[in-house]
Image 1 (tube, one colour):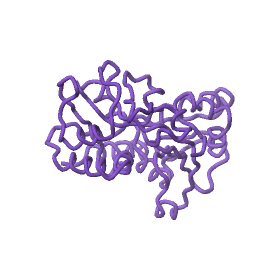
Image 2: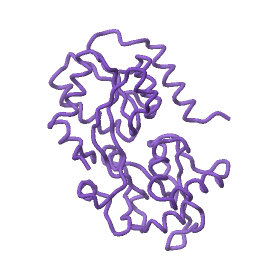
Image 3: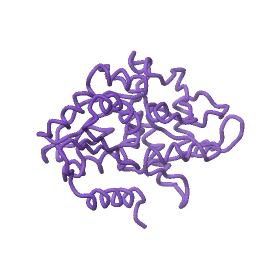
Length: 276
């Protein structure tokens, strides 16, 4: 059976192909990782008000970092929102990236969960299946992302024990168990699945007002301030990917998103452009 994420990307690419390339000079198409899409859309509202002649289209559902980067390469998108830096082979196709910022990468549960904190040891036990219940005895239901996904890479890079736990979780995953193809799928599942546990960037929770909360990890709250002070160390990066020679109106939107006005909005939505 083909991966659902692959099917989703194909459908989105089909939409792009059917609608054809951009037909008017001041139309801009944007998509990418679901973690960034809503926040960036809100940040561009001011630009749209200032430039009503520019039509900015955000493609929902999101098609992921890799799918959007490929779409920019094929001139089917103008700006890709990526949660990872460009790979060498992607740069060789004539793409460039602008660093937008970073957002705390959280372990999330439903806001009504009695659980408010965890240790990294507890998390690796839950992900690996060595421990299957919350402290109150209810069942932990871990929601995974695909092995090749950028968020899975972030998880694995937290520690060798977490890498082992995530690898074990995927190896032991039963058919029909929770696997989220996108960030949006993951937060949807955590909202609906009793005892759900997963990982996602803070900006998605804030921008979409999701009824989820990030667990305090080893005594550190997963806030932007804690990330900026280097106390909370787990983050998701945010990049804008465009062609090396974009049209002026595309470059103008990128420049706006890097401006103090837009970065102030993004900061309220959990994305900081303060360098680590």
